[in-house]
Length: 573
Image (cartoon, rainbow, N blue to C red; front, side, top):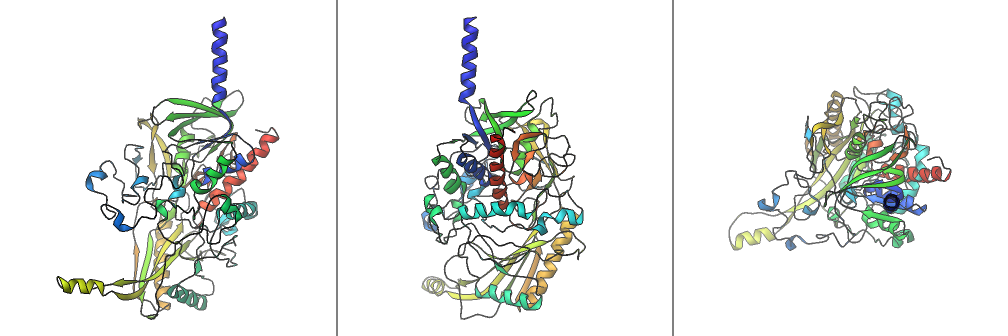
């Protein structure tokens, strides 16, 4: 009798040790924001990251290194490539981010390029840092053309949270007063160069509704007190961002939100924590915790909390919910509608164009520009005008390089190599198209195959649609026409026909919606049937828009986290 009482007390004490007010799964851009907001509001918060620890500055081994400081000038020797079939980050500058093949094998029914960031900070250390806001042209897209389900929110709902995130993160750019690209809270932007400015003036004159603007990016160009409090400094335009930034000049969880959350004393960060599933309690009709596998010891450890945020990045967030089965949810947590894992979408980057220009021979560029020029979407904005749905934005980059002759031998060759000459101006364009989510594009879990942690492997079944192909062709036709009007020469357009996912912007599968019959989440990112579980990363997206999505993920996470605390305080969760 006494022994049983001791064991009962031990179990209670043990559970208390592993109990928090909130759990956040994932430490990337959206997970970092959820953690910051929850800690700022006083919640004892556990952040679970499946990858290794990465401390700001301390764990950026190649930051600011010159090319000659690398043993092989950047090339990774063949012997060091073993076990890494994915070419992403296989350079000496970035190999510390590369993912070994055996970490998470997956099954591709159809080709898909899935980029993962398994370390503290996730892909917030690897992103392109472009931060254009969405508009109601984006939020109202599905309702206007009837494809996908309607968003349960509009721009006015998220606008204050864009403000909130932009002030803290720091955004460099310009306000262009375009309804399709709402203004942001910005610091001084990176100016267009002469060949880009020429293109801007031509489009303004020839079309009147196509605008070349400076792309907004999450870089500090005029740090404010809030950024100094984070320990961050001004961008040096080194353009070595994907190695990690010692200045903290671009926004990442490591430089910004996670250290801020830690200063509250409310944060516990646990790396090497692979989330197996969410624990659901049938009696309370709530999620009560998370099952975690320690990636080093392989031990299964449960953690408990009143509220759970799922920010594992789109595909993993889908997989975690699909693997969270119970008698109440035999097809995955919250999956009463059957749409969980379906309507996966991404961005269409297949189209590209480039050309040269004979003018501006008296000009050249100096220094680096971590951003680029940008043409906001102009197709199908106010009415349906093409044979494809939605539209595309366009990235623009112009520049002028140097070259030297490689003829001769000995002293003659040396002399030729050192006699560098300016080449012509070149300009390039890349497509950022919206893909329309379809039920056929989905992920699911394999019934038999498991990874080394005993978790079912993910099956990808995603492909391009006819709509995507038509959009690529229109991009190529329009860029050909626009480049010709600008007087550019040697124009070339291309369709890479790359596999889906090459954009690294996968979205959907746990989409928001007004109706629980065709969506998983409500307008606050809560699972319809399990209100204390929130999903605020790319998995929650109802449609994809054309803008880089991370700023919107962060704003969603901040908004939902504050709502969660409000609901906890009202005892509604």
